[in-house]
Each structure stands twice: as structure tokens, then as C-alpha cells.
Image (cartoon, rainbow, N blue to C red):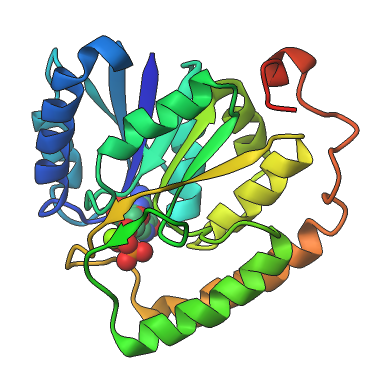
Length: 254
Ligand SMILES: Nc1nc2c(ncn2[C@@H]2O[C@H](COP(=O)(O)OP(=O)(O)O)[C@@H](O)[C@H]2O)c(=O)[nH]1
Ligand SMILES: [Mg+2]
């Protein structure tokens, strides 16, 4: 079974279409994907996010709402991952910005032994169909440089599509402390600390209007979080002594 975590804050407008497209996609790829379930994580949305999520629940694509007391995308993804119990889990943004073909592409990588497969808008083969405003693009470039020092070799830490072996994701999520938008970086540092290899796959990415990331409001906080992650994870460069049980990593690529 594949469980898909969708963090959602005030997403009554964007979430219904994403869940509809996901249901269509899962139905037409049932033979490959098997059973799929969605966990929408809502923390104190002031709109009808939880209602639209529940309304999308169906036999073809079961949708559950998970409540998270702590605010922030990182806190929501953590709560969602910890609520999973499947062998394969993933998270994706509520706006459906990442083309859903990435699910099968990631699935293939996992079948070949990958532990962690992340969508990337910065590797060959990716297609980015719209770009952010200039201020955000400049900020993003600076952010990428700094994030790259914490997770060397990963070109795009921030794409909202990541797939994991379930037990590994739950182990890393338990240690995750970053509640805001930089949580991806900490999650990747911790996954590597657990001995996981991270594979980037190209995605088709469309900028969907209505982003919850407001550069003037969240930009500085995201950089400050990076500094805290660097400090907090300074000892997590190598696999930690309490590494993932060998069985988790069995099948990893050498
Ligand atoms: N539950 C929850 N989800 C959040 C929060 N902040 C952002 N998100 C979700 O995180 C995802 C971020 O995607 P988006 O807003 O499109 O940002 P962008 O793609 O980085 O511009 C969306 O699914 C948001 O609803 C939060 O505080 N709580
Ligand atoms: Mg988006």
C-alpha cells in the first residue's frame, strides 16, 4: 500500500482538484500502484479544508483527515508521516504542482532498491512550466546554495514531492524538529544520517497560483531555520550509531 500525506493549510480552493486528479490517476494506474490512501493534514485552517477533504473520500481513493496541533508545513508533514503505517509513503503539496507521473517514476526507483526518491526541478529531464516572481527566484537561488551545504549533491531540496520507504520515513520524522518550510532539508539530513541514499528524479512542475509561501512573511524564517538545522544536525553527517535496522535498508543500492 502507498500512503500519500498532503499538508494542507487553508486549501479549500486548491485541494479538491488535486484530490480529483489523484483519484483519476490512481484509478488508471491501479495495476502498478495497488492500494493507495491519502492523509490530509490540517492544522487550524480557517476555511473548509477538512470538509472538502472528507467530501473527496471514496472507495477508489480513501481520504482521511489528520489533525496537527502545531502550525507549519514541517509540523504537518511530520504528523502525517507519523500517522502512516504503509511500506511506502509519500508527501505532496495540496496544489498538485508536481505532475502525478512522478508517482510511478518514484515507484520504479523503489522497486530497484531506492529508499528515498525526491522530485527535482533541477535535474536533466525536469520541466518547469512557470516560474516564480524575480524576488522569489533570487531568494530561492541563495537558499539552494545554503541548503546545498547541508545536503551536498542534492540539487532541489524543496520540491513538494518526496517518496520514502515507510519505516525509514517514520524514523526520520520522529527526529524532525523544523516546523516551517525548511523541514525538507532537516528531513533529508536525518535520512542520510540513517544511511539512506537519496535519489532525485525529474518532475514536471507547474506553479499553481495561491501559494501559502509568502516570501516577505516566510523567507527570513526559512533562512533562520536553515541556520538552526546546521547547528542541530552538526553531528548527523555520518550514519548515526542507532542506524535504521538492516532490514530497512536491505535492498538499498550499494
Ligand atoms: N497543514 C499545513 N500545511 C501547510 C502549512 N503551510 C503550508 N502548508 C502546505 O504546504 C504546501 C506548500 O505548497 P504551496 O503553498 O503551493 O507553496 P509553494 O509551492 O512552495 O509555493 C501546501 O500543500 C500547503 O497547504 C501549514 O502551516 N500547515
Ligand atoms: Mg505550490
